Amino acid sequence: MKKVVTFGELMLRLAPNGYLRFVQADSFEATYGGGEANVAVSLSNFGVDVKFITKLPAHEIGQAAVNSLRKYGVDTSGIARGGARVGIYYLEKGASQRPSKVIYDRAFSAISLAEPKDFNWDEIFEDVEWFHFTGITPALSSGVADICLEACKKAKEKGIRVSLDLNYRKNLWSPEKAQEVITKLTPYIDVCIANEEDAEKVFGIKADNTDITGGKINYEGYKQVAEKLVQKYGFKMVATTLRESISASDNNWSAMLYDGKEFYFSKKYSVHIVDRVGGGDSFGAGLIYSQLNNFTPQESIEFAVAASCLKHTIEGDFNLMSVAEVKALASGDASGRVQR
Image (cartoon, rainbow, N blue to C red; front, top):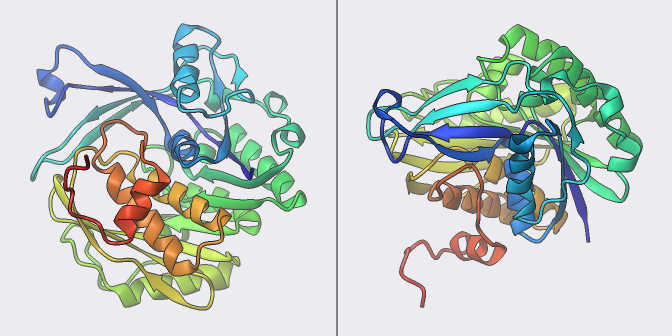
């Protein structure tokens, strides 16, 4: 079985029930999630042998975080233990014209203070075919950025395919710092995943005539961006999610894949959102799964978008869908009719 490794921060998510605002809540639901952990859970549900790497405290909250992955079959044996804090994020779910809000409390988390000695990449990468991380991870600290670079170099040395979801977060670093750090990683990246803002914020490459707040997308502009990314950084593949935000509750959702030769666009889904957190991660997992299983480029982008579309209907960070369910939607069954 093909093995995948993902590396990043697993966080405690605290959210008011339903659509209550922070100031209304007298209790918070506790779940766990994080970009690379979300990808790991998706892949595990697809039947992939996947290992998640991070650092978590040895206390009970750290163990609860580990257990949240183990219940879905993710290999947690490589998680380093130590430090004092599990990172936290607070989520207020938006509705209609009221946007969702996220407040981070992740400073000095165990993973942000990790050291190179915490991870033996030769052991971690044994019999591994794919390594995935997001731009959030090197943004956590200069030390973690160095660890990411070490991991990428080791992966490339072993012939492992590497994917990066840019996932720019303004609360973690500036565009200038992001470009400085990510540019050092690009020689080792095979597949770059980006949304409509990432290429501009991280690389200064912008799609023309696109207004993300107005829900307007210029497809020709994104072709230009993908071509520039491949030409400048040598990526073998660029995948771009195309979110048209009608409101916090309703989005149009599609994507583009560029393999350095041809452009492939998925069908477009009109999504009524239950929980959009993890939507991009489920897209990344779908793309990785489809590439590991030698899907054609068109099949690959359709599978990835369908997986992500379905994630928007599921509470929590994790995409709890099977390959059969994703394929059913990708093949055209979007009726939502009761199955019995």
